[in-house]
Length: 320
Length: 320
Image 1 (cartoon, each protein chain N blue to C red):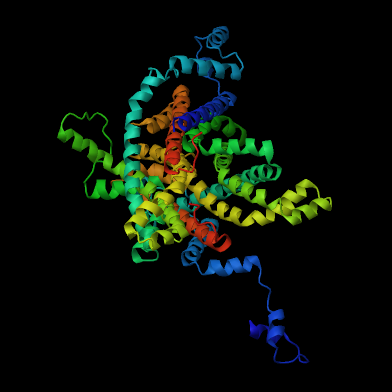
Image 2 (tube, rainbow over the protein chains, first blue to last red; image 1 turned 180 degrees about the vertical axis):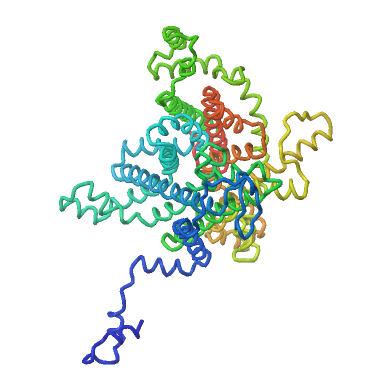
């Protein structure tokens, strides 16, 4: 760092800086740079970031480079083990597994991210309102949160999908309808922990002087909530958001694995596992590759979440 | 104690009511028409269809139907009639429920028995090799989706080693030692899948909670009194550590039922989870509704048990 400040100084500037000058010229340390420095030292989290970047890049760029169709049937070459021709083998319809993994990964990861956004949006909204206004509003919102926490998520999800799948398909078409349904439902059943964290932070932050100052200046309530208090709550929300992506991917895979999610022509990783189940004893590779990918993705996300938690929120030892 | 117990039950009742109300509302607001099957049948003219609708009370607004449904359920225990099995839903559920409870129950007991000692050792010998292995195992066990663990176990212990059957045979009646052994053998894999996930989750909680209590002042006091390490660990630290663990167990209960649903599907265990999936596929609305409510009921009941345990563990909680 000292070298870079030296090289920046012009010809007339003194060549040697005093300690104080150097201290002033050094790039200021911010909350985020501190967090990054801490995060960088978390080995498993860094490995997780690397693996995730690789997977995300692969599913985004992959289908452009590896142009084989994921849907093309080849009944002369079904259930082939991995070969030079088909790197991950083929499934029971002779479709190329690598091509399916790449396109399927797009859907799985997109579902994870969008469902997370839905959950975070709901969580922040409900948590902020409950924490900021307190009183009866808080009481009712928290009761609703507890109610959602004690719902058996998967059975309720299954029931809701059963009821709303057909009309949504009719309205948005086969793929988009199921996508909307999945994302909305997974988000709808996953906002509770975010809401609790946001509410707890709001309860203490709204008593602080800077909120009082904003109030005195006549800042509207909405701005106080979203522009003044909310940025202070970001760290736990970021951690929760990371974990929520993993949870959403698992939930989508689980539903698809039970045959209740995406239709067969949308090869999400869970759906591929569902199709591979029947051939498990003879051709395990059909199931192992998508299964391992779900596992690796979720494990990486959880490690990243763990690293972020250490970096951003060192006090929370207990939250699982 | 009795008063506390009664209070908890009184709080649980509105929760169950609220959950059943939500489920009923979702069901009623969905655009699916239960009469649509008749619409396709030319032998049923529209006016007859209207008569059937009126005789079933379907012309009433749904809040009225909810009250009626609830009244029937409470007074007669009637949950309706299965479309596909052609028997009362209650009969169907009581056939399936014992199997689910047996698998979940044993998995839970095993995971508690494993997680507590593992978590304690891990915390007492923090940063030892044992701790590193145990925490890594816990992290992986917590991240791997249950359906993938199930498939891997089937591959290793079912297909390759042939130690355990991987399809659950519900016709086995326990009459002698041999049939009991058979029952245990076929339950091993489903129970292992569930226990693995639960152990990993619980172990993390136990470890974190122990670590929080170990450096406390009361531990030093106990040590300076000359108590044995054993007495300090089990009589003081462990008892205090259990309190947050019990709370976290309560929050994890809906997750156990999710896991049970998947394992039942993988190993073809005829429990209520697989009943839900098969009713989904055969569009058996009364069963879907009933099973979802039974799941919700089980979650509330287990939460109640945990709450009572909580009061028993923490003497600071007032029973009045």
